[in-house]
Image 1 (tube, one colour):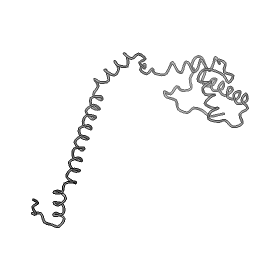
Image 2 (cartoon, rainbow, N blue to C red):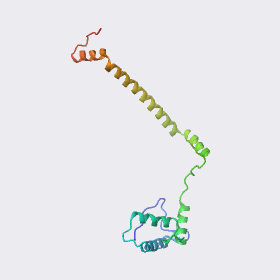
Image 3 (cartoon, helix red, strand yellow):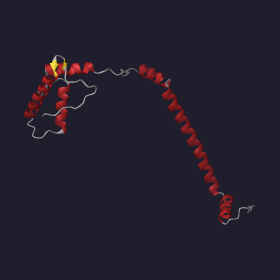
Image 4 (tube, rainbow, N blue to C red):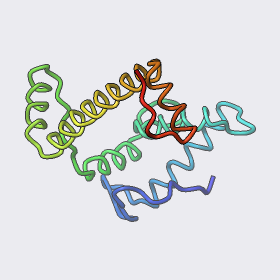
Length: 158
């Protein structure tokens, strides 16, 4: 009720879309919001109510769920003005082809090298931990550590 969506991405200004002026579109949406609130006897609008209303408007429908020509024309024109993103593959062969294409990029190679290096580092660290565990259980190692603590660096163990 007097609010607006704020900045849009991409910005579409306050022009005419689908033969409908932005000002007229705003008025139609406002009228439909009043009808929506009235029809549902809403005292305080909840997030769920607003989500339902926005769904109707986004689909070019009025508060009654029927097609609203002006709202639909405006929304469709805005959608057509949006830049198209890459189409999502729907067949397995397209998905595999996209994966093979990605595997040829430098980013993928960098990630693959990083993963391999992480595996090698992890393996090396584990070997060191294993060696320290074995040494820690060794009687020779414990006696040598005791000698070091006592300051006897030359003591020999037989």
